[in-house]
Length: 217
Image (cartoon, rainbow, N blue to C red; front, side):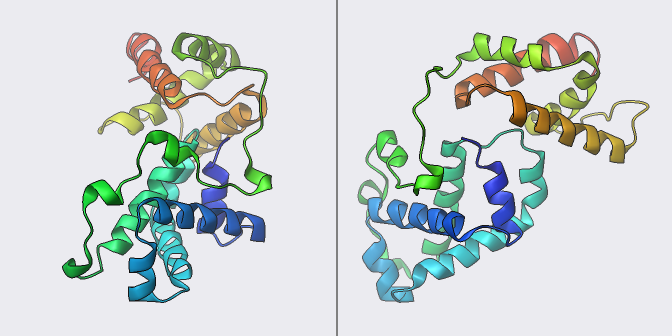
């Protein structure tokens, strides 16, 4: 599942009640896993989750442009955003409230995946297996037109390094519009949710074999 649109809607205050509840439940589950629930209640009151939601919205507003430039946001990336916000909120508590790291951290990566989702966001069982790197690369290449290459190269380059050169002959406004159209095409036609490793494989290989070799970056 792609969490990009959810985070953008939440940053803009356009989320549905179900989406808000999902985000709130995700935060609450993570806090329970880290053993911080009682500490938060003691310092911020029983409704502390509303304070954290406000903190999360404020952080997403600041980084909204970066979210919009993402191609895809998977569950682990979403969870990392939640974790970062909770950790920032927790850092405001005086040092005497600190608890050991081995108690605070989630026990395993599997535990991270167990954060409760409402039905609207529940993972569906799919016949297709998540694509591994080479397979996902071929799927992406088939979905792309050659005219997409300079635009995708530019935005992928920005993901991994600084000083990326804007494609010649394309205004910044048109560049952004073409990037948005490309992301919509992926959303409409990508047949499955790729793993984080598959996405990384695609970015590394595409930058090397297409972008650098053909002179787009």
